[in-house]
Length: 261
Ligand SMILES: Nc1ncnc2c1ncn2[C@@H]1O[C@H](COP(=O)(O)OP(=O)(O)O)[C@@H](O)[C@H]1O
Ligand SMILES: [Mg+2]
Image (cartoon, rainbow, N blue to C red; front, side, top):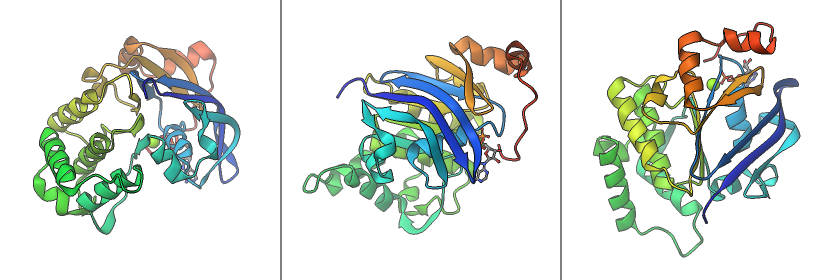
């Protein structure tokens, strides 16, 4: 199915009764790579988790649609099944489940019964993708993320992306903790997904990833909303000048800066 569209309208999200996202609009079409940038604590990770259905996040207003289907009505596994993927800022470690088993069941859970990927095909695909991402083959038998370094976890998220081939991916701070070689490998992996059937939202607060992945659109998020959108040049300007000029332009008071990155 060509041309997936993720459409977010007037989204409001609360955590424990306080509003973190307040009236966010965003539309991502197949074939497009979008980047969201913004200061710490402005709600970027909250946006990602809320869209994927994390139970902690209350959506109090607004809508999220994937190809016209109401995402907020879907269970978490249905969202994945529908082709949505989230690479988390802090991937969880799952002891007792190997990376290989995890990926295979993730692939099969989005396929119909009787249409599971064969073991041979799976191994061949996983080997190939691991080579592409320069991940040592021993990682397929390691427990998911357990004892992985920060950079190894990020690479492994991209391995999941390449294995699962979602229609819409949200990549939260996929560049954090990566050295320059890993950054190049991860970028190459993301770029290899580029197709009319794939839309991508990259959340980052550094411009450097965008030296390797050219976004079609860049959005600035502040105080729980998209306050400015532009092309790749917007990311460049943010890198050089920070966010103050946007605050001035929009008459925004100083952000309350959160603890978390
Ligand atoms: N589970 C949570 N419980 C309470 N507050 C949270 C939780 N998650 C995020 N927040 C708060 O929501 C705000 C936005 O956080 P986050 O979405 O992680 O920001 P960003 O990813 O833009 O740095 C911060 O003030 C943060 O402290
Ligand atoms: Mg974050």
